Image (cartoon, rainbow, N blue to C red; front, side, top):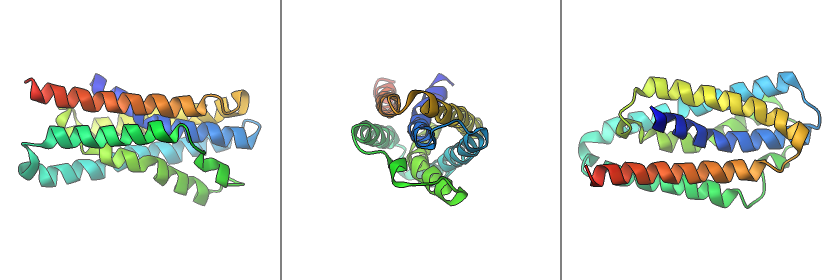
Length: 183
């Protein structure tokens, strides 16, 4: 279960970083916006792993021999992408207002990685539904507080959160790979 919590924390860092950027851009804390950001990001981050998990079940018998390698590669790629993006421009800088349409676009963009990570849920030997609820709830909390922190601290935490999330995902991928190689 600790792996799922770490996975949820790592996946939520991308949404957390964007939420901080939204808070920075907003300027002052808006409770309604923070709740909407949390809901949009939490729901999409919680639902997207389902698609990856279902894909892994459909392919399961064909890839059982290599599933740990696939999980490692996916998590390493997602993690490295997050680390790389932590040094670049921020997506939310392109938007002038945060309508439901904009939040939907940002929620989908930040949750694509969660879909790929959902592929690894069957390797963690956890209940996928509980995992998805945890991922969604943790993302909601981080996104809500991300908006708040962005209004109070500026963008100084934004890149660090995304970097840390990437490192954790790479670490989980390495753990899955090593546990299957040495089991």
